[in-house]
Image 1 (cartoon, rainbow, N blue to C red):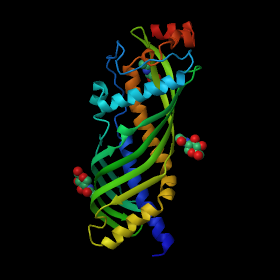
Image 2 (cartoon, helix red, strand yellow):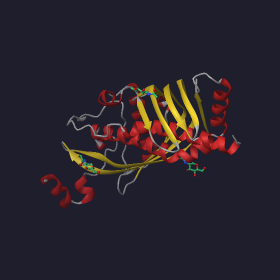
Image 3 (tube, protein in one colour):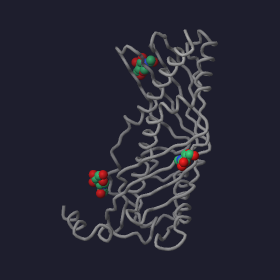
Length: 290
Ligand SMILES: *[C@@H]1O[C@H](CO)[C@@H](O)[C@H](O)[C@H]1NC(C)=O
Ligand SMILES: *[C@@H]1O[C@H](CO)[C@@H](O)[C@H](O)[C@H]1NC(C)=O
Ligand SMILES: *[C@@H]1O[C@H](CO)[C@@H](O)[C@H](O)[C@H]1NC(C)=O
């Protein structure tokens, strides 16, 4: 098999694997916490800021860091929904692609655990005075996914079956998080309704290894296949970036929605306007009556 052909095959395998990882998010329960429960008293871990006073961005950066630190310690209502943050248990994934010329493959990923969120560093947290959307820069020195995989099938004409351990490790992950919100009123407090989350990602390196890739029949091919993944990680990463970005966006959307429906925006920004003040009384009145 020529080098290019081999490369393309491996790219195909990699794509399928990444698609498997991303499927997790697609099947994730997107329904938000509908319970009426919310914090009516400011939690002690959260320092408030005032947006119309100088030094807001510095204050807000510290507040969001404190929020993330607390997520790691455990906020009961969030724990209930997501489990611990670090290491984070991720749902099992079953992937099936049948009767396709390119690939016929079934794969399972189980016992998935993501490590690294405990070391999340908030570099900057800005809030727009116009629409109160958030622009947040966060940094993860290392993120690692560990799990077990089981795979059977073929890609192009290459039979591919194996089962064993898999890991994916990402270094120096910079995330720029842009979230749009819509203010709403609940129990006399102003809350953020997260309406959209967009992320931009930069990273310095991705490493991966699939153990026992050809059921141990050829350690040599297993080694060279994994080596190929790692030597060409940037090409693979670029090709799959949209999927990775979507995955990260979905996770962050779920986490932020949960947190912001739970904790009033007043506890983050003391002098945040009411929806009435921001959007005008007519619309707010209309919402109240509906
Ligand atoms: C994946 O798991 C299902 C049920 O858990 C099983 O029936 C199937 O054979 C597994 N597929 C592979 C490729 O291991
Ligand atoms: C990623 O790197 C580019 C180029 O250095 C930079 O312009 C962009 O702001 C960075 N994005 C993040 C999320 O760090
Ligand atoms: C939040 O916004 C969505 C639309 O993006 C809307 O369906 C939902 O009712 C809003 N929730 C609240 C509590 O305002």
